[in-house]
Image 1 (cartoon, rainbow, N blue to C red):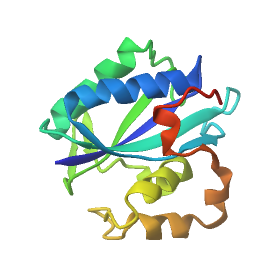
Image 2 (cartoon, rainbow, N blue to C red):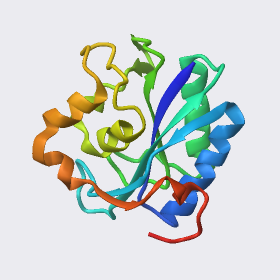
Image 3 (cartoon, helix red, strand yellow):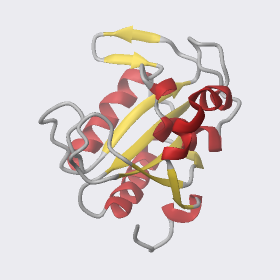
Length: 170
């Protein structure tokens, strides 16, 4: 199964944290695609540092619930504290899409409920999976991105997909 996972960080060494998180995720499957790295303004609570964001495609045998538990455990291992909604964070891992699965139950919503509204997710997702179809909306990611219009320009590319292996600092 292919899962698309959004990664974000706005505290500490953001790039190193995201790179290490990708390495950890690779222990739970095979990374089949990595987007470029993007810098974005925070959403919601705005008085905090800007984020670095990316999206990966992970081929995994974990079911969606097991994968979500894994994502939450990885976040905690990087010091993620959930103090309030949209708070600053060392690491944010979001299960965006999972092989066409639709589930809305206690503790698990797939696809991610705000995926289609967020440029910081759609820009990197469209880079690696433009034709992936949102299973509820029936539209490919590239169309969802087009529908954002000018909001897509709020996302600034800071490095190509090689960020995951390089040593530069954003």
